[in-house]
Image (cartoon, rainbow, N blue to C red; front, side):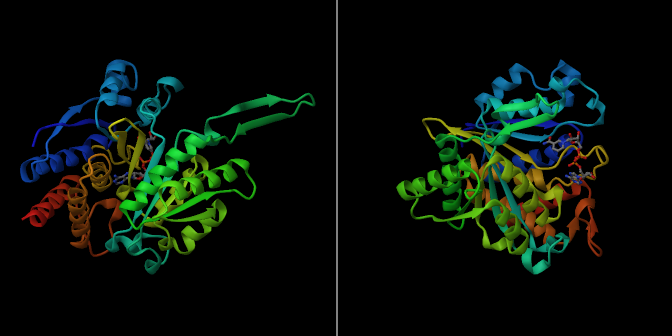
Length: 370
Ligand code: NAD
């Protein structure tokens, strides 16, 4: 197969290069065994880019990021760069990527592998086999709305102001991603806002309903108030398939949902941009976790969140569901076999290093593809 899928890999700092190293091995495996070739460039982002270039991401790296089909990121930051100027800190590189690629749709699956169900803070039967997707609008809403700021009032009090604001097109484009995602899963979308007390929530509900009627009536749509959704996520999370919500509610609800799984080292994510004429979306895939300075360089990092982010890339950027399923199944089998990195270690299981976890995923892939 021609090497036409362009990929930019940004391993970043701390455990980023360690976990990304295991993804590179999975990519090499796919090349040899499944004839999936990527045209790969690798570059610096975050603290390592500051050390080399004085900025957290260079214009040249950004140019490459804009031209590829997908960006795969490890994690950026660490104590070494903590005191640095706010505008050139490692996270500023990440924010620039998100902004310039217009990544407005953030996908956070909350997937509980049966072998890890006991690690959840909820009862095992509530979360075993959980597979839901939280879709958060990422570039609009109260985090960006104007007016904003802190002002001093005539009576000497100070007042902090932020504005929740959404336009129809912003709502429609994220809802469209939600409906498309639902179609690839269990065909159910739950749209979440506060239409009872916020005009922006009312508009959100109207726009989602109109789009549903016009183009997606085959998908089962429900609406839920954000406070109730928080409650339902911890009461009965398996009732959901895809949840679509705004930036603020999504920030909180995706963190609640990820904690249902009980393990930071297992959580992948995807962020998608607008589609061009050919339907191609800019996209970035990254684990939810950070650079874990406490274990960096010790081969203790769990590479599975990054391997699962790669699998999301296959599914959502390249429509390669079969190959994504293969990776997901290999991860599931490795966990069933009892192998664990330190973050997900349980009594009676076998402790593995980052590389041993990678070895086991490759061995499972070999078996599954045999
Ligand atoms: P963190 O996610 O790096 O670590 C939190 C805890 O989880 C640590 O104890 C760590 O050892 C553990 N952990 C995280 N990922 C793991 C993995 N794959 N395997 C095993 N254990 C894992 O969060 P933090 O400590 O708050 O942040 C550390 C640095 O990472 C900071 O500089 C922060 O700014 C940065 N950060 C970056 C991103 C990103 O690049 N997207 C996200 C979060 C934090």
